[in-house]
Image 1 (cartoon, rainbow, N blue to C red):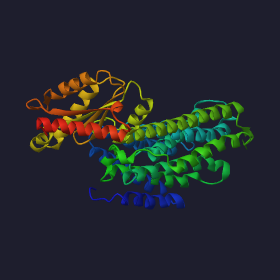
Image 2 (cartoon, rainbow, N blue to C red):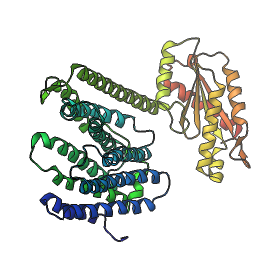
Image 3 (cartoon, rainbow, N blue to C red):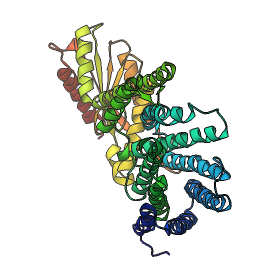
Image 4 (spheres, rainbow, N blue to C red):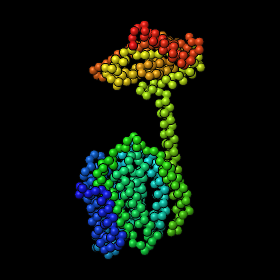
Length: 471
């Protein structure tokens, strides 16, 4: 059993389903034995799993078990009673499998993409609204139109809604972030086969009244084998692994196509008739309102995501990635704007260069050096006023721009004091750096420009370094 290749599982279903398709007398025995084997295989796959995903796998295996129990009970009742009742206990087991499998799959999807399912859920809901309307039009309304409503009719409605649950789970498996390889492909194929098989079986009495739809049970057997194969797969544990950042959900063109079909399908159903049953205008209106709300919400989320993306890119283009301070390009832009205003002899540029920074890098490493730069940046931000700009030009060079000359000397001393305080690298060690500061006033230059101001402040800073012999 341990060496059974995963691909052999659906192959067994194909072989076991042939008698069912051909109407052979061995059909029921082959079908039942194969189904029992798939259920056992699924539970063996569950036993090998650990962690929070095991509960999801158990729910999926429980769905297969519930369907098998329904089949076995139906066979027994069929033998005991020549004509079993329209509704039996087997229907309870068959219907119960739908929510069990759906909940298990939704748990897997949640584990695969925690906190990143909003867009996939909205796209899935949009398609689900249309599928539900189609089911109501072509399956549910015709089935209950000419009957008094009772338990048989209730269960007749539950089956199509179970397929809607399948559709939701399958859509989320396809649309959610993450790789869709290995066991995920088995599950997606199983959902497609089960959904398609159920719909075909439901519509067969209307399309082909004399056809024996039990021959289509081979499709469901193959779908069940694919579910068991997914749980038995050697990489089944990866089903619940969170998708990496590079697998984030994107607006695939296929989603736009699906949403377009969804928007066009509902109006097309308005005047469609099946067995003289017309879909009510109220039902169409409700479905279209729901679909419109979902699509508008999805559109709003896309626009907001684009706005956030542009804002992030704009911030990165104007700020230093390590310290978050204004970078050289943005500094020139702000200096040029301040020079254009030209208020009170300003602006004033303080050019700062750390003394003793290189020995810290050499002794403690570049990570410690980065920690010092981040701490210095934080202290500079805390020292200046809201109207003043702090920038990092690169390395250990910083610039502070004041819009006016007021308190320029006081700012210089405050900057020198705050930078000179000890910086803790960890609980056991700390370092200390000094700073050389050069100051340049726009009013003192004949032709003040941003480049001229920075060059003047830079020269003043190196003059101070030369006087103090500190580097």
